[in-house]
View (cartoon, rainbow over the protein chains, first blue to last red):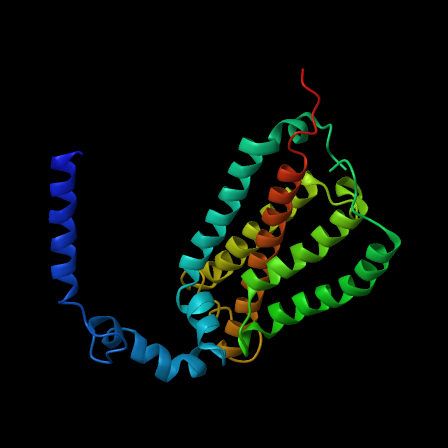
Length: 97
Length: 146
């Protein structure tokens, strides 16, 4: 048994469990995450973006830059998959149909 | 894929289902403003329709959509998204600030239009990438050892 590793794991785990006691309660309306920009999104999202679906309003409008990054990540992941798993035939033009 | 899974029953079922899957994909994308859905989900549905055809008919002949076509579609999706983001820059706005150009109606109508445009970009990207991944996995092991 790796005693130092076990001790380190227990220490870090204990710190994390202790720190989790300071987190806001789930769904707490006064938590820091819920008082910064969320009220603006909820109160004025429909008027500003015209999207009745709040998720789309935030995803595509308020945080469009973030979604652009997500799209690029998906594209890059697809490219990586192609290159790792099966790019050979496609690049040689044998599988191009 | 060397051997398509097709049989008369599967072929008939796929012919019956594919148009509705495509229609539902378009609905999910376009209606993403007002109901759950959007580009990511619609892209998956679009890819699912093509993958169904590929599975039933054998990989390479599924609507003639090969790896390069799918890759081009994915590229076009990212380019569409980034290009729509560029438009407001020429009208003194910020990147991806769709409401600036003032071509039609008010800024809200333009925001709806811009959002729809980038959702279509996301749809193309997701569908293309899924088809690329499917083709890569389906072609795995088909090559003769050399």
